[in-house]
Length: 349
Ligand SMILES: NC(=O)c1ccc[n+]([C@@H]2O[C@H](COP(=O)([O-])OP(=O)(O)OC[C@H]3O[C@@H](n4cnc5c(N)ncnc54)[C@H](O)[C@@H]3O)[C@@H](O)[C@H]2O)c1
Picture 1 (cartoon, rainbow, N blue to C red):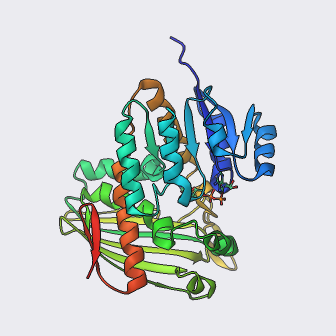
Picture 2 (cartoon, rainbow, N blue to C red; picture 1 turned 180 degrees about the vertical axis):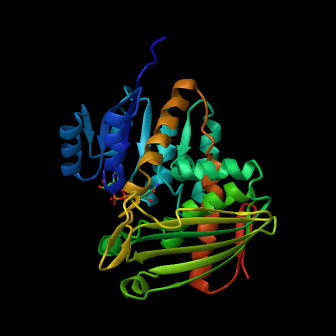
């Protein structure tokens, strides 16, 4: 039987949104990018022309009146996610949202309630690392007992120095939620996934070292958080915006019988250059090149979920829990105190 095509409208056509738009147009089977939306009209026109998209909007609410669409794909700045998810679900669409689910715990809990009220509509959150081949294989090995019981996770997520100026602009818009909610959120999700545990206590520190602008924004250029989980496992999370060698995403999981590492050296290819500078491995220059396959696989899964009438493994609860951890880190970083993460709320000491 011929599968039908899922018609998608995307909001947000920036760094990641445009990449998703290209994928939805050309690289995802049984999918058609039918509408694009951004507050920036030039971006809308460019996407419509380059990707041959019939409908273009500068107003999100207007896109939601287009009932040819089956699904809404949200790649707008993080501060808009919750409101846009709720509106799209209530208008009857399937929804994919980029991470984080939201910047505040209360708004993510509201989204969770609305997702639960619409069980026949697929909802997926963009925790794409779970769809990266290496991260998925690590999960399988942990489940098979390769490292015994996981007891510690150490994560690095550091953006390249050459994108620092762009990030300062991004941070100035106050859309990101700060270093931990923006960068470490993937690592918090991975930690919960690999450790099968929830965060209990958080202590986070950070600072501005090469650029003072982050201080003025009450944000950090480099930060670190230490977390104790409810099964006594330990998490160490390093996040930053100033990695000289490129985009460094590395994860280590230490267990009672072994250790797993993913991405220890963030090499972009198989080439090793030997010359008068020594031995050189070139590194990934950003998230799009590092997670190219994962961005495709997660969207394929979203479209298949819609066609098959099911929900993906990444749930709205994963979004709520990871935002809780990110927000607790932000609170700890700002107040210099240990923060207890408790069920559906958090309190400071
Ligand atoms: N999964 C990942 O690895 C990953 C990587 C990067 C970014 N992200 C997430 O993707 C989202 C977008 O990030 P980005 O780096 O592409 O941002 P960006 O600033 O480059 O792009 C934002 C886009 O949204 C548009 N926009 C802004 N406000 C809007 C509104 N109210 N309505 C409609 N459109 C609006 C902008 O014009 C632009 O097209 C963020 O939530 C970010 O956290 C995820």
